Image (cartoon, rainbow, N blue to C red; front, side):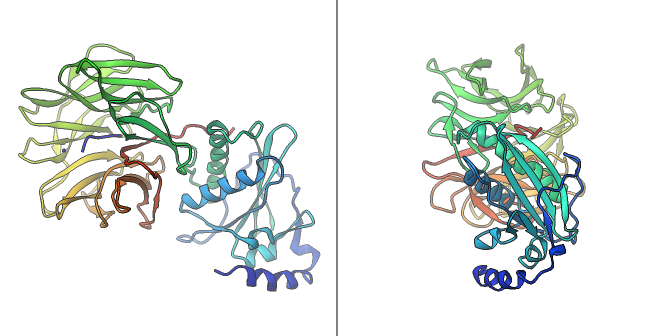
Length: 438
C-alpha cells in the first residue's frame, strides 16, 4: 500500500575431499532417485534454526544465472543458510551426492537442478540427514532469455523450493512499485529490472491483488488530480478525477473496490469507488480533519488509515463501510505525537507504521491482539512501510545511504538489504505473489 507521507570454506573442502575418498559407497546415493513428482515432505531440522542449503551448479544455457538467482532468493528469504563458494560444488561427484560430505559442510539439504531438452528445469531436493531425495518436480522455463518474465519464472521455482525446505512459500516471485522522478516504477524482489510504468506526475502506487495492475494518484495537464488504474499490459483507466485532492489509493483484497483520500476546502476524507468504474461514496466523516493512507485488513472488513482528527496524526481503524472508528496508536511512546502511513500485514496480526522520533520518522509495528509496539529502525530517516506477502519482511524508504532508497527489513532478525540504487525513490508498495510454479 502506498501513502503520502503527512567461514573460510576452501580449507574445509580440502580436508573433507580427502576423507571422502574413504567413505563407503552407502554414504553416497544416486542423484536420479525418483519419488513421485510433486510429493512434498518438509525437511526436518531443529526449531529456531536455519537449515544449511547447497544449490548445485546447473549446466546448460542460463544455468549459471538460474543457480545464482535461486541462491540469492533463498538467502533473501532469511529462513535458510545458503552454502556458497567452492564448498557448494563438493557434494557432487561422478553424478552422485555425497551426503556425509554435505553434512560436514553444514547442509541439511542439497538442491540439484538439471535443464531438460524441453526447456524445463528438473529440480531434485535432497534430504541430507535421511540420505534420500525429498521431492522432485519439473518447472517449465522456456528458452533462456534473461528477460523479466523468464527471471520471474525462476523466482517462482525458488519460492517452491523454500516451501519444501521450510514449510513457508518464499517471496521472490513478487515485485515492488515505487515513485521516482514523478513516475511509478516497478522492480523485481531482488532489485533487478527496475523500469517505469507510468507517465510523469504519478505517486502513491498500490497493487491490485491480482498483481496485474497498479493504482496511483496523478496530476494531469489540466490540473485535475486523478486516481488511475494502470494495467501492467499498458492500458490505464481513470477511476476518479477532480480539481481537488485525490491521493493514496488502495485496493480491497477482493479487488473490487478502491479506497482513496479525497478532499476539498473542508478537509480530506476517505472515499470508495468500484475498481471497474462507478460513482464514489464517502466512508469517513473527519469534520475538517485530514484522513489519508488507507490500508485494508486481509479479510477486507476493516480499514486502517491516518487521521488528524485528534489534533495530530494518528492511526485509526474503521469498518470498511466507515462505521465504528477506533484509535489504534496510543500517545504513550515516541517524543512527538505523529504516527502515520499504516500498512496491514497479510496475516492480519500487525500493522506497520511510521512514527516521528527525534524529528525524523522511524518504522514500528503494532499488534492487533494486545497493541504491543515494536520498533524496527533507528538509523537515519525511515518511512512508508509496506509488507511482503510472507508477513515477515517489509520494504521501507530509508536515507541511511545518504539518499532516499528502498530497503527490505526482516522484522524477525533485523537484517536489512538495499533494494534500489541511483535516483531517489519513495512510496514503496509490495505486490502479491505474481506467479506460482506449476
